Length: 290
Image 1 (cartoon, rainbow, N blue to C red):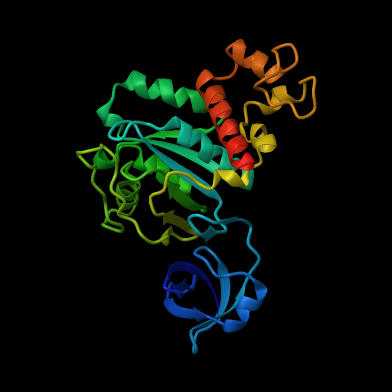
Image 2 (cartoon, rainbow, N blue to C red):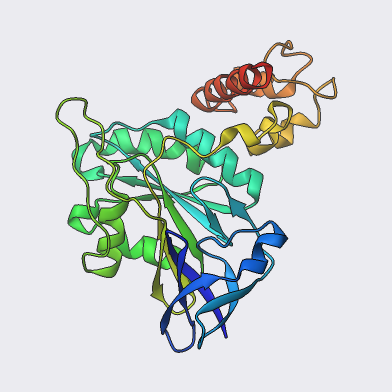
């Protein structure tokens, strides 16, 4: 039989048959170790229903190491507008990572009912202007949930973001039931308490899957070479081809030599995005030296 792994706990895999919707608890065939590939959530697999053993893992379209998940088609980055405040440096790291693995991005600005409309628009337009899909949401009040639901249709989407931004609340709103545990904000440091401990794939409707992932500070941005980072800031690409030097860092060069820097100085590239690019570039540079 063929199925999709929707959960992995202590090497016991829950596999759903997409047609019957039956779920099987399976172990992985020992011979799979010889392939060097360990089954993860999102994998399309072949299994023996009588023995409950995974026999084969089909080729993946993509794979994320942390959190471990395969074959996603888009990532929904949940950004809290308040408590905790938006972390745009983290968001830009995540967007660069999504570009590097070739999956679509949706930015969900949550808790929009807690801030002024102008505040939301100022942040949202940074990303709208460069082509990203942004949705304003108040999960507690059901605002923006139906718009998000339409964007999820026929996709396998990961929900990502820091603890406390409201990922679980949004997922529960989409299902209209308590699918995953909702966290609280620590009064001491105003940061979220991590409640999700497993990567879990949920079927929202036919051919539409969403995943909640453990709270984490970032994807493994260090998989990206600093020389490649500019390719994943999508608004840089059109200007990069006119830079004077191959391998231009878009940081140290003058505006006459670097067309990306010139566009930034002319206000054609967001100062927030450019500043974050410089910070991430330096972070990757230090990591490589280390």
